[in-house]
Amino acid sequence: MKLNKKRIKNFLLLSIFYIGSSFFYLNAQPPIELIGYMGVQGGELFNYKLELKATAPQKWEGFSYTYDQPHKVVKAEVKVELLEDGNTLHIKEHKLIYNDGFKSKATICLLNANLTINQKQTEIKGPLITRTDIQQYQCATGSLTFINEQEIAQLFQQGITQTPETSNQTASKTPNTAGEQIKRINAPSGDRANAKLQQHFRTQSQRQEFEAQKAKRQEARLAEQKPVQDEITIGKAKRINVKEDVVSFFIWDGGKIDYDQVNVYVNDKLILEKYTLTATPKKLDIKMDSPQVSIKILAINEGNEPPNTADITLKDGKTLHHILSYNNRNNYSEILLIKE
Image (cartoon, rainbow, N blue to C red):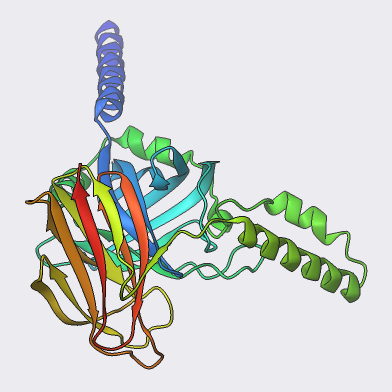
């Protein structure tokens, strides 16, 4: 009997040690960082950063950060899962933590996206699939892209490893917030506030009057916002001072897709020929190998609706420059990058 008690005691001590060690190991692991960019309807492009820890094979949880400037950021809780087909990464924000000054002209809902992983696992990209929020506002369409090969490799390396049992127990404590996945970022009201608001409408005319006033307030807010894009066209160049040795250049069609085609030249050298603009940003790396670098965007056609328009974002480190280029056929816009 004494022997049995001793064995039981040793077993309990070993179990406690194993659970404690597993818990310490899980929490001691640094989070995986995955940094990409999110393009949204209307031509805006934002940085999108994930900080994740594996909670089960092919599943991660953590936080997402959406920002244009590093000090104006939205933080949300996020869950990520590699689906059974092995080629699709599902990302779903389920709870807004804070919005520290982030603004957008578009209605950006909590993100829900199915991203496709290419065969070499060097790129992950796909569309945003959230459609409406809890107040039935239309969410902006767009896309999400990750192209850092080292970060992608680290994600899958850690994600395929079986995590300790305690990680699943911790994950199960996360509240089920499926009803919140479409709550708008920066929305002034949540589920409770919206339910309380419904009680005030006794007639349909009251609701219509409320919606009309809300539309007027929305127009006033939009009128107060500064434009996020500088405009360039023939005879109107844009000069930008940059600090980095390599500047990322993104070009796409942020409006109605009407099959505009462009050529892109860097210091008069053709680097993108007869490219048809789509809703997904095309990325080019511009090396600052001279004190001044010229980027020209030539309009090959005017699509189905003239003029030829191209949304452009230049990423200099953490700084983003938003530009709208528009021209008639065979005319070009120019951006001059000046190395500081």
